[in-house]
Length: 219
Image (tube, rainbow, N blue to C red):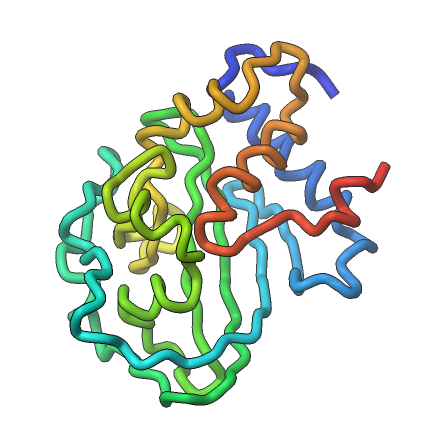
């Protein structure tokens, strides 16, 4: 696979190559991982993940960042009040549940880097979206909460209409992805697939998305 033309940016053909390569790598390698499926549609890379979570009661004194503190990507229209969107689902407390997370990776036409979109639901939630508090409680590891809330290296979590689905979804703002990737590795020999794996490790880890180790080592 050819190396990148303009690291840390990705061209649209490079993005497509990276997504297709990761889809091919996952074809027979998802058994025993928390990834249920990986599919490249030609516009977005779809990753479905299953994880077990412990329901948490929201604490009033827990200053979880609210959605309207974070900017949205320049080329999408933000939804100012993610918490009030539709009929927000409030999960039952003190109960271990299975959480299905639908991740979508698109290419930003403004920053020319991947953008991570996501939505999630439990078997009892149906199509009702989770609140931003439960996104932080269930998806964001403690070590990333401050940086996401302050729009740090990882950007911040916002909600906007998905560029492909045209439905509301959470996303991690890509404004600082260039800087973060440059610090990680400014290597002109990176292939598009390696770039995507590194990017998932950097940005995806902020919401619990990791490339399974067995796939990273696969040839």
